[in-house]
Each structure stands twice: as C-alpha cells, then as structure tokens.
Image 1 (cartoon, rainbow, N blue to C red):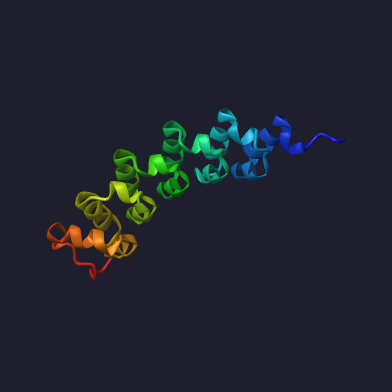
Image 2 (image 1 turned 45 degrees about the vertical axis):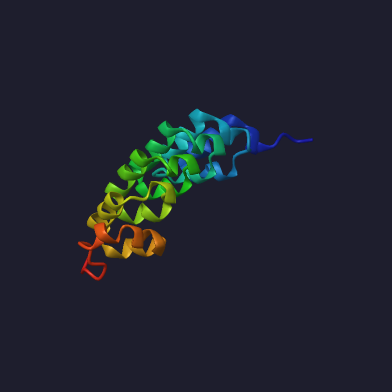
Length: 148
C-alpha cells in the first residue's frame, strides 16, 4: 500500500507554508500538530483554524493568533473559548459582527454596546430577543436603526 501523502509531514508542511488553508487536506494526525497548525494560521490570516483538530481549537494561544489575523475566526474556536468573556470582548472590539459567534453565556449589555459601537445596530439581529428584553433598560441608548 502506498503511503498517504496527507500523512507526510514534510509534504504537508510545504503545502501549508505556501497556502495555510491546505491544512484542510492534512491527515487527522497532522491537524493535531501544533507547529503545523500555527504555520497554517500565519499563512491563512487565521482561517485555517477551521481545519485544526478540536483540541487545538480550544487552545487560547492558537485561537488568539487566529483572532489577531481576523476577529471573525472566533467562529472556529471551541465552545469553551467562545464563552470566554475576555476573548470574546477582544474579538468584538475588533469586529462587532463577531457578536453572533459568541456563546450566549457571555452576552452582557456592555458587550452588546461594544458590538453596536464598533459595527452598528444590525449586530443585534444575532442576539436572542429574550436577551435583548432582559437588557432593555440598558439598551435604550442603542438606536438599532442608526446609520452605519
């Protein structure tokens, strides 16, 4: 049987060095390789996080690299990190549209206000209406029809 090229670290390393999203085609084992995933993140503006092993999607250091490249990569982070108030706040400060990727457990009036200030009132469309009602007294200052 021929060896699977997707398991060949050297071949995959060179592919990922050229195009980070080539991580998609790496073997399951190589998607767990921290060094390879870090290189993929650096060569893909963080987007290769979507193809990293689930355990690496939960590593704060790697997710922070992906978020520094593009805050929208929050969507590929583990559920635990999408429920991390500090990490979510940093992502939302950079791109208010990332609010939709945050775990409902971290939603707060302050976070909603930050998202609205950064990207406009349309970001509230992603927030459950019952939460908006809970925050009603705090959100009165937010005009969701504001011009962005």
